[in-house]
Length: 285
Image 1: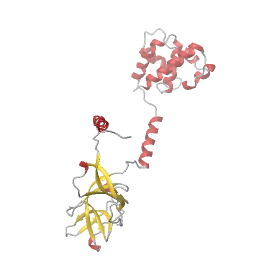
Image 2: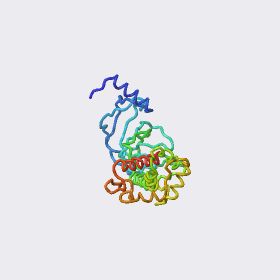
Image 3: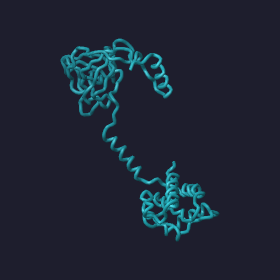
Image 4: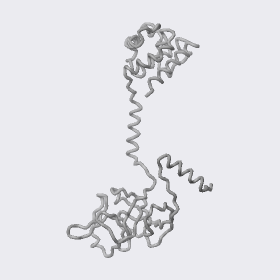
């Protein structure tokens, strides 16, 4: 699919309205395909493999290029295997700068630091590796300073993923706590649909499943309804409610079956409808 300038501008405008800052990759930049070690130095060769396109304002001058990283000795500096780093070719650098170096003809990334005695050190950012002084090596050449990390595809580690999933599963298993005020509000909303006292059983059964009332605690439910609706024409009666707990109506609402219920036809449909509406109201945020 070929996109013209007008279509491209429209896409950029939409992205900007969503808070993004889109950039057009229109500038070729030298890219070394061979990976540069963050651990022990390794040879990457002197040949530029090719050019990659980046936004023009991503690079400040022509003395910048991109290399790929492997190894984990700079992981605590947020430079991971597979990342690409933008390197500025320069001979000027300060303590704390991360350098692209050639050591005995092999290439690596290391932090730079000069101690109080003026001795230079090359420092990994991983406790598994030790700092060393380049004076111990025959030939050290600074090729540039790392200015920016161009991360590879963002990923989450397995442990953090499992932790997040387990926490979410625990939250799903934990029933939502419904306050007395919320329950009374639901009772008031359902009340206009209660044409006979026994229909309150559908409300009671859902509230029992949602832990609003204890298992088969008809008395507490009847008191709740009476407190919320003292003038209602069809207040629930414990004895009448308990008679409805037969057949499938004694089971969870999702298992209600008209063929094994104490009521059938339209009446069964009324119980099922009221139970569904009660559940929806209780689950509202």
